[in-house]
Amino acid sequence: MTVETFDPQSPLISVTAPAIDFFEKQLKNKADSLIRLSTKVSGCTGFAYVIEIADQAEDGDEVLTFSNVLSIAVAEQAHEIIRYTEIDYVDDGINGIIKYNNPNVVDECGCGESFNVG
Image (tube, rainbow, N blue to C red; front, side, top):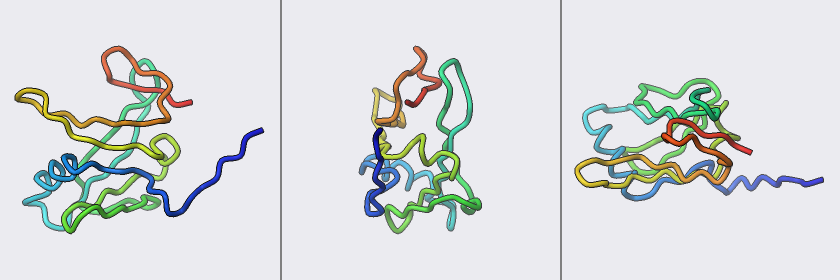
């Protein structure tokens, strides 16, 4: 039997400096908006991340503040799926991509559309 301990000082997610910069640019002309992170059932392995700009958090969301501009609301149903995930933004040539470094992922589909947690 294993026991999981919850550390209330440990963040639900972390966000790298490049990701903060990216999200702040997305929110630049959207005063009082925030980023909302959730998951949905999708693809061949289980779940997909959903990131959207929202006017407000939904009931049950945990709102985390990363700067004066950036707050991220994490959907309650996604907490256990994404706990301890680091969100990063990586330049890839002329494109940029949001990367999720999720230690809970045990399997991903080949195209990167979906993931499964253990």
